[in-house]
Image (cartoon, rainbow, N blue to C red; front, side, top):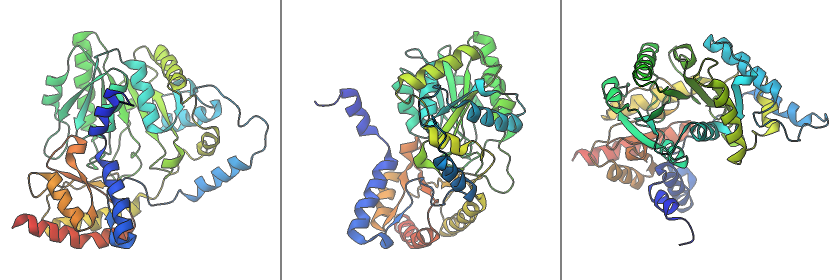
Length: 394
């Protein structure tokens, strides 16, 4: 076998998102792009804000010597200072550049964090539904993923969390606004989560690190609050990217920030910087670091996504689908009208509408819709959603 057995097995279980995206490319070649309605991939259709475009041009035009050389593995100091300043203002926690590592997107940030934290077989708790790559990231570094179900409305289930916590629990990952549901965890919910973890840490003597994966934090609707976990829990690690809020997924830029009062904060920061190097990232790209330095408080217009949400939510509920109304991000996670959501997703594909089965997110019986697409794609998909639903109800 040319590749390892472990990787071969993981390929069999790998992301349904990519599978559906690739199916979409095939179908577009066969039927024409205008006849296929691909709602499978969270690839933002909006362009970066003008301030970001100008910042990239300015950074690329700077001819100061040395700008493209090696740098500290944590990233450019002035960029980390800018990030720390913005995050301090948001969270009310005083951070400095020494608490920030610039990374190659949130995926890079999660990997260096789990590499720095985990010993073999230590446990990482995730709540279902979850971003599927969490399972692979944990496994990359010898961890064991423990999946905790949420309530019917996708809110955190603290009774199930308490049952899942063990002496081996090293970290809990949350994602709010959530991919795939669009649900936002309220301040009250996060406060209770912090108290549960604080009590477990006190009972066992082992700190549980709360990792908040927040690339959608600025894409929220209807005035909903998205508290920063650093306000509420000292053993917190905040990870984000600018893939969604600045519409820069291809630039692979984000950061990891460690709470100054986090257990073993100094050694954790040293570990993150070391792991950034030895995992091969070395450092986040210099050009895009400099570009995002002065646009930390800029974001795409969430109103564009709010309008798309309202249109699609209204149409799906009119048809008869059961779906929790998202408060942020750009996803809907309806319940499949038949038990086998893979079969229903296939039925939708026959109508040239592409979505992702819920089992790809740890929640069979649901499917994910990504609505960060042109309006004509959303509008064109409605007939397929209607026809597939009608056939399923027969």
